Image (cartoon, rainbow, N blue to C red; front, side, top):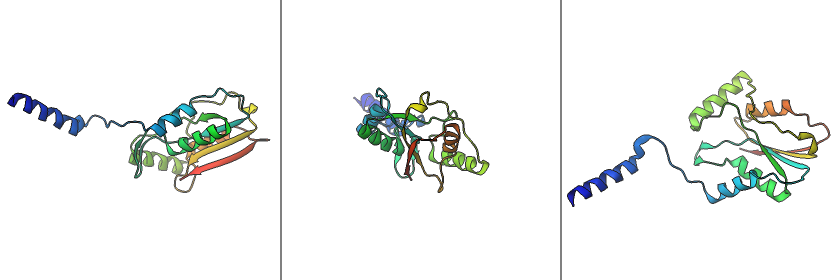
Length: 164
């Protein structure tokens, strides 16, 4: 009986300490629903929702699997029965809030144009494009400048969704 109590306490201590390996997070039902919406593009829509959103450790929120801008993009996409496109950087931003802000700040100082790993194959078919992104230090994330330089918006209606 003493051995089983000791083993139980050791297991509890290891669970509480988490071995220091990784933080376990559960995806919320709202995040799961947003993922389901954003990952389906089976429409003949002429409306596209383009978004860049950050996951990982968010300031005063904790760890998120679906970023704030992605959540907003999912609402717009669902309401308008639109297609969506996520801007994904070739070099992922760190999950750590502090490390991410260091990297993003350096990109601003360098006027960097981070590479985007995916492309919108049929961009010309869309008449209206909603573009969503966070605001970092009063400006766009530098990857958004990459996006706007890669695509021509002549003749398209464009609305921006800015989420601080």
